[in-house]
Image (cartoon, rainbow, N blue to C red; front, side, top):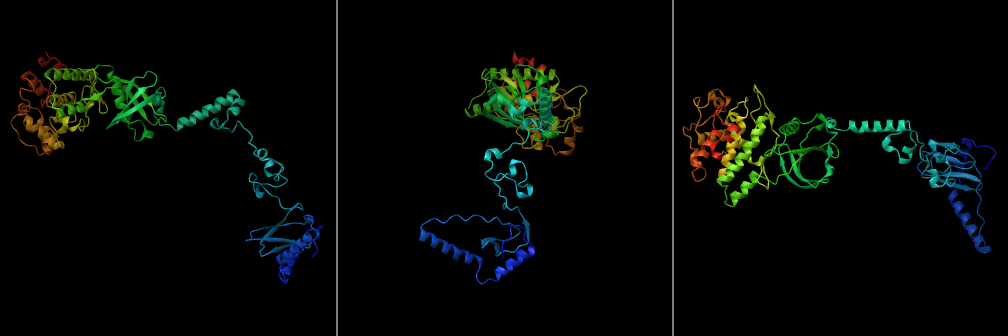
Length: 480
């Protein structure tokens, strides 16, 4: 078949040509190889390079949906071998368009597209082909703009984009974040080391970068911050701020936020020791507090507790590990995670407060209307621990705890504790009957004199209404 460049061959003619070539005894590839060999022989004879074969300006056939294709041009004819044609399109006489890796696919544009994206390879350099999208302030977002683009914005547009950006950021923050927007960031402190982890947070020692002051950073536990600020953390902050400044109450410096506003920290004055670890060390070394040291520690504890009670604050978790002790010999009450504000008349609270070994008997027996006497019972347990250097009533559970108390102090009755039999505990618990107070056996005269022992008994009085107050205890003659 002669190639006719003046017209486009019909599909029937093309398919007929393919069938004709399939019936040929020699394939087009074989004939092409033979002709190439003959051409190479002629080149060797003349020792002159063969002139390049000019491309034949034939109408090309673009084949799609095929498995593989062998295109061979011979004797001014186009052959397609070993392929099944399922569809075809006719391109321009210039041949099929080629695309670089920066160009779009042919379906997205063509050679008539005026944009550089669809220009033939070689007409544009790579840099010319990488055209940045046109800057449109109406659809731009502030965080995606370059500094050059920001400089082109009008003041009103720039302010609008900044406000929208800030709104998007704030919408991603916890709901309580607005309350802490005036707080400093924790990155303004250098973390020195981790001190401990308690029920309501983790404590770190850190240094203020501005002043070099060493502080204690307590990271409050926030389990579900997007549902609101934890009530326990809010109470602790409120109680610390309400307590104000007192020499024997740990002072809160400020409230800090984390880098992502998902953590809240309390920056408090750093105190080197807690009484529990200090007494454990003394016990291992066989040392005890002298009588004068016991009085000094108790006076400071009662002074701080009186300040809290005067401000209508129940601590509800007094124990030796929550008492801090500085190198200068100053004792401070700390950890207000369970502290509550109380009033008159009393409101019912949960009875499951105060660490078990320091929990008052009215709490162990289910009393929900309670007040400052629960803190004074804890003070009595702490006083006994200052003397013995070990816990006074180390129970393994509520029932064991109340029985240990009854063993040492005797089982109470309505005559010494008005309303005792009406409490929930005596009706439900199996309590032992111990008729005598045997506490003096634990505290011989060599450890504490009679005046001091009487004060200890007043702290450990069963009836909350008869229990000594912090103010009364400070006036006790044991301190004179």
